[in-house]
Structures are given as structure tokens and as C-alpha cells.
Image (cartoon, rainbow, N blue to C red; front, side, top):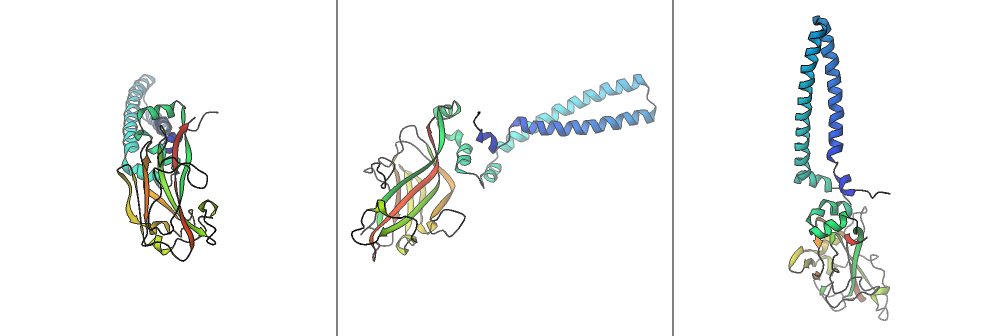
Length: 278
């Protein structure tokens, strides 16, 4: 079964647009031809005169058709490249749709591999869990991180070679232990507790190497009461590429360390679409 061409689905092909225009033009020309034949009969034009008129009309129709086709192609190409059109398309796009809209920004070898189906795009959720006891400023991903279930699914806070990740959403969740002995964040139920004031009133930022992905903003963006979305989720209005072999550094700066609970911890999840071997 042929793969769905999601880039094509995002914006109709030239052939589809031309087909619609051709059908409309045929309808208009058919109605015009009937009217012209009726006028010829009313005017009493003979067979020879009618034949000559039809030749001229046929030539004019071909000229109109070619002009219309050129106009359609020019308008189509302008629309496809229009920032306004792209912005309108992105309002309800999935992460995959956002990826397809930006596919041409990838390195040429990655684009070629995707086109030849040597690579594919997959849903991705990169996460890291950090204990924050007695801490107020936290690097949520660090070069010392190693993959381990319940801790993180990314090594060294970097994507593997050849993997490109379009970041569309960030989720920040909080949890804490039931008592002093409950000190393994891997056992905590994240996303069940409201974010404490120390987080809400703090700041969040994220860089890729030296490039700013999310500037320092209020961590209140994660205190989301929109029931149509996942809790504590921030959707980027400007999705960003995360590239391989570059440090991914999300930072949480709280107003002060969290007190009054045992072993507080936070979990960050980066959501988006990533390239993967087919």
C-alpha cells in the first residue's frame, strides 16, 4: 500500500487545482458554445460562415485556456509560498503536519533519505525526571544523563546522529514522595499534583547549544487549565528544530526550593516529530 503523502495532503497539488479549473472552464465554454450556435441560427449564418466562426472561436478558446492555466499556476505557486497561507494552515496542524511544513529546512541528505523511504518520521516524546530537593535552579537535562527507565530516555542531553526532532510541545509535571522513605522519583505519579507556587512563579528557558529555543519566560505557561489539552502542556507557537549532537538544555529557575513535602521532583517531556530509520 502506498504511503500517505502528508505534505501533499497539507496543500493540494497543482494537478488537483488545474483539474478543478479545467472542469469549470469546460462548463463555461460549453454554455458559451450553445449560446453562440443559437446566435448564429438567429442571425441566419450559413454553414460556411458558421464553420469559419467556429474555427476562430476554437482558436480563441485555446488561447483563453492557456492564459488561464498560466494564471492558475502563477497563483498556485504564490499561494504555496505565502507566509499568510502557511500561517493559516498551521492553526490546526498535528506535529506531523508542522514537520512537513518545515521539511525543506532539513539538510539535503535527510530530505533525500525521507523521500527515498530510507528514513521515516515518528512521534517522539523525550523526557527526563529530576529530583529538586533543596534546589531552586535546575538543569532539567544534563550531559551526565544516561538512558534509564524512570530517569530519562536520552543520552547526554543530545539527539543521536542523524536524528532531527521538531519540538512542538513542552510538558512540565511535578510530584513528590509520600514520606521520607519514598525517595525514588521513578515511582512517582507525575501530572497528578498541581504545580506549586515556587514553580509557577519561577521562570523556564531552553537552549540548543548556544541557540535560544525558548527564551526566559514565566513558568506559569505550564499552569494550563485548558481541558482540551494535556495538563501542564505548553504548545509552541513557533516550533523549533532540535539537531543531533548538540546540548539540549531546558532550565527551571524556581523562586525558592520547595519545602513542606518529601523528595519533590519534576518531569519534563519534549513532544514532537522525529526522523528515524525506516
